[in-house]
Amino acid sequence: MLAFEKPDVEQFFRTFGIQTFAVRPDEKQLVFSTNLNGTYNLWAMDLPETFPYPLTFENQSCHELLYSQTGDYLIAIMDKDGDENGQVYAVSTRGGKVKPLRKQEGFRHDMPLLTRDGKRLYYTSNKEDQTFLKAYTY
Image (tube, rainbow, N blue to C red; front, side, top):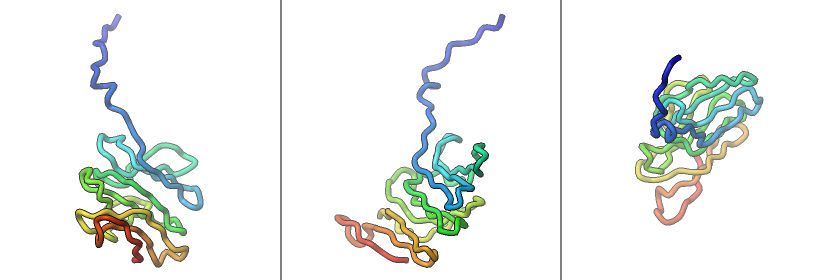
């Protein structure tokens, strides 16, 4: 008979979390921010399959995800090392490096909205006023 050690209490504090998720408009892909590999990254599942695969390797929290209308890319709001100052990035649905779209260290960007044609991005930021969020177009 095999004898096993009792589980270490540390094992019970290693939990997996999902911060946010988005479903592609045609419902063929789901992307979510999770700490499956020990740090937060974006992971995807090609539906109806439910086996997740890593999409990014930024090791940063993602607060918001938004697919383009065509489903070709995502808009992600990610902070840097937990500073809660989200920056705006574009992410390919196939993975790889994220592309900075709106980035100003020390200031937060929130609530991304894309026009149907994907040519304009609306977002809020406190980059000009620390007290209030203002709306911007990119």
